[in-house]
Image (cartoon, rainbow, N blue to C red):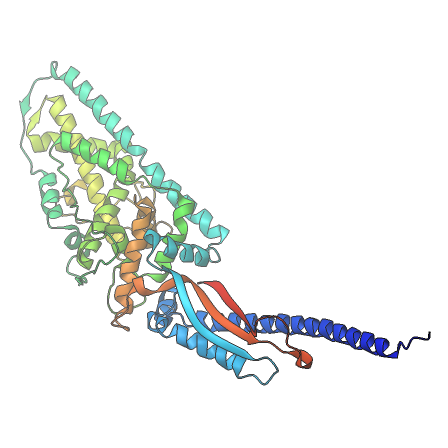
Amino acid sequence: MIRDDKGAMTTFLAMLFLVFMLLISVCVEGIYTYVARGKAAGAFMAGLSHVHGNYQKELEETYHIFAMDPRYQKEMPEDLSEKMKESLEGSKDSFLFQTGNAGMEKKVYLTDQEGEVLKYQIRELMKYQMGKDAIDLWRKKWNQSQEAKNEIPQIEEKMEQEGKKGEEKEQKDKTKTIEKKQDPRKGLMKRLREGSVSLIMGERKVSSLAVISSYGKKDTTKEKTWNFMKKKEMKEQLHDIQKKVSGTSLISELPAVLYSLKYLHCLTSKQKKEGLQYEVEYLIAGKDSEKENLGSVFWKMIALRFPVNGAYVYKSPEKEKEASVLAASVLGLTGIPPLIAAAKHLLLLALAYGESVIDVRNLADGNQVPMVKNAANWQLSFSGLATLTSEKKPVKKGLSYEDYLGILLMMKNSEKEKYMRMMDVMEQNIRRKVPDFKLDQCVASCTISMNISLKKLSFGGMTLPFPQWSKWNFKRTLTY
């Protein structure tokens, strides 16, 4: 019997054609979805770039610090959704997108982590501005400041040795009364009680603006007035000085130091500005007012200069001889070596301290002072000690006021406190332009998400056993 295979062949070819159409449809749908997802991802990244560009302009212009503008944060979800809708739904291609809502989560504010967020941005900025020459120069300045503290134990040792020699000699010498002269230490201490601002600045006008501390911790400690009449109290002061002139690592602190000196204002800044005048001084002192901050920094600078000047007076036979004669005359006695030795050392220390005051006056005038003293650059005599009057002798190559601010910043025990106080300065200054500005509302990092849907292509009119819409959730971390 002859079979008719024509119908079976037609059915087979039809089925084969459908299989091929199905395979082609799946491939086309896959390519369509893949390309569409790439387009959606590209549009999302472009949207993120748009969001990234809405940083706080005043903060960037003044301090080169980036964070999302608080005024934009509320608008961001709607703004990003509109941008995505315009990019995807408004295009004239074959892709049929549907954009959902944008979201923002895991916000990290500029004030978070006790200043670490701000510190990161500063380090990233300054690593391109810190050349090897700058690092070497600051290393030299830092080493010199640290070497000065080594003079203090030597001064203490010499005081002890001469005290013992005086006690041994006391039994041999006879006491004599001589004409008593006025003690210059009393005049010096009277001047010191007037306060460091008056002592250094004289009649010059000083800013007394209040500093608002929203993030930084206030320093309520008060500087102790030195007593050059009592040996025991002087020894305590010498110990305090040795502690104060010790610091942390130079390299770890240098970015913050250079940033502060470049972008913040200080007493000797040449550029005029409104508002806070002594911003770097506030980072160091943390007082309620500008005048207090300036005064506190002056005392600290005097303390830094003291070991340098103390080293010179104790190595100068001329100064020691003058001090011995003056010690006997202010006591009105001879033949009591222990008393005269003690008075001599206190007079030498008073002279070194007075010289330090003159040095800081030079610094406040914008001049430089030598790191090592000698007979040629020494300024103060015992005759001018009571009134702190002398001829100033600034040098061309030495350390400036800004250098000492940098050294004091590196010596701060609390590294984080610098950044917290820096935030206070930034916020207070920007509020002069943007009254409702708050640094703790500035987002430095966040996760942004977006829901996007794509309608299936249905190539060739075929309906595949898949959902009609492909749904994606794009997420990216935005960091300034």
